[in-house]
Length: 142
Ligand SMILES: [Zn+2]
Image: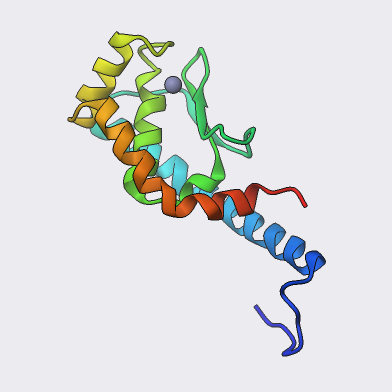
C-alpha cells in the first residue's frame, strides 16, 4: 500500500476506505482458503457435503449448513486462529448428519473433534477473544 506521509488515518473516510480494502482482500483470500480447508476435513473424516460458499453472512453468524448439506462460511473466519476456524468447519460438517443441536449432534461433533465438543467450544470462545476486536472493526458499517 502506498500513501502520502501526511495521510491522516484517523479520518473517518480513510478508515472506511481501509476497511473496504481489508474486506475485499479477506474475501479474496477466504474464497480460496476456506473451501480448501473444508475439503481437507471432508477427506480426513470421510464425510462429504454438496459444496461450500464463502460470503458475508449476517453479523454473528460464522457459518451454516443447509438442508442439502451445503456449507456457507463467513469470510472473516480466516482472520482467526486455524484451530478455531477448524472448529467452525467441523461444527457445520456435523450438521451433514444432524440438522439440530441436540445431544446426538454434540456427541457426533465430539467424535469428529476427538474431544468433548462443549469443552472445545468454551476453549474456542476464549481463543477467539483477542481477535474479536478485529472482527468487530471489519463488520462495522460506517
Ligand atoms: Zn450448528
